[in-house]
Length: 183
Image 1 (cartoon, one colour):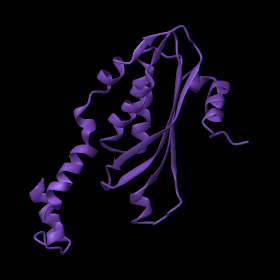
Image 2 (cartoon, one colour; image 1 turned 90 degrees about the horizontal axis):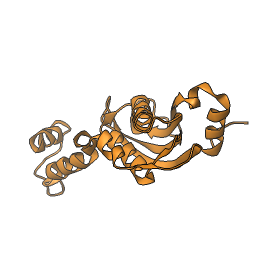
Image 3 (spheres, helix red, strand yellow; image 1 turned 60 degrees about the horizontal axis):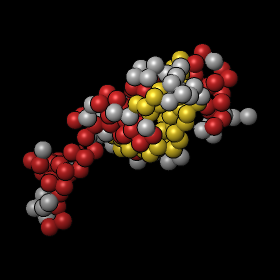
Image 4 (cartoon, one colour; image 1 turned 90 degrees about the vertical axis):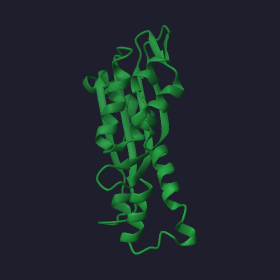
């Protein structure tokens, strides 16, 4: 990978031997290992270690989980917030594992639409949740710093499963509690 970065530097007209760039290939390689660590993680392993039996069947929400990912079309970052809600049926998740699940999927080349669906599906099945809602709001550098150059645009995606899809009151409560419901 380091040699590929040297070739990219040459392609754009830079000198890979210039003082400020000599260690850049090594730094880029290290950065990509971190940014793409989701490929080495198993979402099922992350989540199964965080399931606890608890008598509750109400909505549980974790809001404003930071999301940092890379667009698979341009290999440029997109970033924002993920909001997760689920209705438990006698089993709940440890809250930190939900954030780790978001990181696991976002630390891969992604499109926001798929990322949202992957998170929702991974939460629904292991505890047989009554319903799951996931909303991601993100800004995409591929749209902001190239092409149409729209600085204030945000993409919002949602995945609603189970009662969040079939029950408008449940969906609306979730959207209101995460601050997304418009009046």
